[in-house]
Length: 145
Image 1: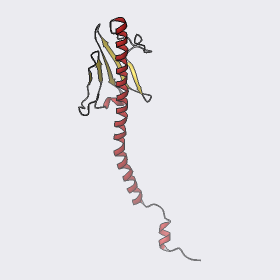
Image 2 (image 1 turned 90 degrees about the vertical axis):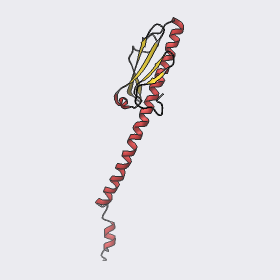
Image 3 (image 1 turned 90 degrees about the horizontal axis):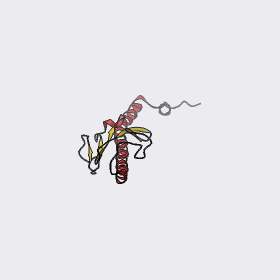
Image 4 (image 1 turned 60 degrees about the vertical axis):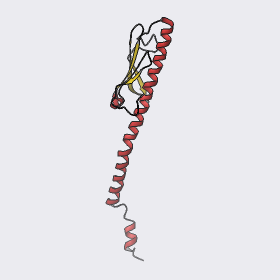
């Protein structure tokens, strides 16, 4: 019977604490880099949903105005299933609320960020009857709209 050499015994001992700590440090650095990037992409996707909802609402307002010669602040009159404020859902999560203020010859629609989207640097979005698009956030470049 032969005795295992010290070299082969060392190979079968498993992972050292130092190797485990280095691996953990590398995984931590990767997570620190990837999580903000992922969050940024999610916010950008939700932003697109809000802008699309505003553009859809503006089209509905213009159709209503063409028929009735006035704008309206009633969601059901515009074909929505409920009254304003409406919640804009993105991936099953409410990310913006949609509201309308209206005059006889004007309207202004606003998508207000809620929940985790409230930390988006683009802030809230507004679209009016003249087609003017604005955002209330601190981010200036690249433009949010």
